[in-house]
Image (cartoon, rainbow, N blue to C red):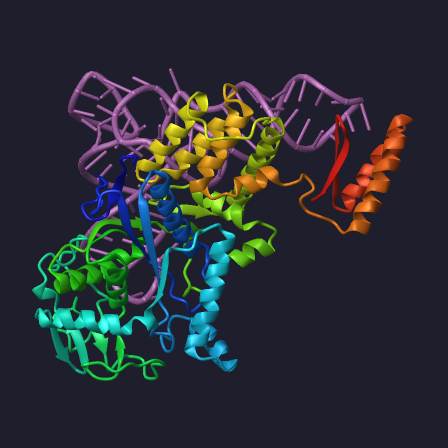
Length: 476
RNA sequence: GGCGCCGUACCCAAGCGGUAAGGGAGAGGUCUGCAAAACCUUCAUGCGGCGGUUCGAUUCCGCCCGGCGCCUCCA
């Protein structure tokens, strides 16, 4: 096991990682709310969670990765968010809320799969854990942290010392804070609902029976309940988006710890936003980019993954197509390099135990262990591949090893044929004929003729490359 | 109004007290009939501005300018 340091939002500092149970990591990563397609900003978050789990494993820890799927509540209503259109069109297709949830859940895993994001060990849906949530709320209630008002069960923030510590909230400051929701039933503006029987949404689609009446759970309880169910009452890492610090995670801590009476999450890791042009990409502000829109524009999903790896998870990442182009060019170049290495790697590559390659691999591990410094780790990959002192088999084996974390499909890239983009057999034969024709022209030193054929093919989207062993081609 | 984050070359982006990682683009070169590809080399005395602390600051402190996020579902 490699020692690791992580930046804990709780305390805002780099801390040495000491899991509750040595060598084992209970990791809960916030999952999607499945009421729309994930946009590339969301996806950045899941790339982060994925690389974190991969890195922990690479560094010798046994990881149990749990992710929630939020498929409950607030699917109807919320009409000022602009998402209504999505729901409405789904409704027009005669689908239920659960069908919508299933549709977007499938879409989510399709996207994450394309990005080489490994499926977490446990994927849990909120709707399948309402009983667990009710049990947890009962414990909170039994411990005296709740009150019932206006049909809803509230969490009483004033009973929980240290509320808001994660977010550095100052409860005294909230007064003038312009936009706190006015809920006459709340004793304190920061109180939040654990169980609704009367919500702001008239036609809540899903309701369950509970000791407090028929209704549905509050926004925050699912993560507390499910993380405890699958990881125990104290977990090592909880990761999520930076926007969740002040409300969602703050409330999760309050309710979890008031139920169990013990610390809940040891290390809080928060990923920063992907920003584009004038600000973050959000579901509610109209148009946003999906993975699909990138692939439609001719990019491969892993180009986007590579792009994400180029920035540290705690920094905002500036998205642009220019930047994505750069990522694509880098990844292609990487593939080219690996293919060359593979053709030179005589012995079957094995992970280098010593030698110069080991130096790069050690640096790679050290960088991962230092708050998941993926940009550094990526630079180590380039260093390994460009180092003249590293033999081709070592370089190749080292790259494959690093790819356990990077997830860039390096082995596939190395083994891909140059003409990876296949044409139909007829088309291929036709192209081969033209090449043969050109070869004859070249032999006769009829350069004009040879160049004309090359230009014609280029215009048709076929790129010719003359090499020592003849001419190869690929579709552009 | 409150809280937090950030400003590094043409672009993306690391570094966060010891003299600027990496990638892309650009430039030069090798190779080639010419290209393309590949490979090699090169590319910030400088890190928004002004002060301060220090032997030494891109890194710490203060102020200013500019950008972003959260406080409402949101990664």
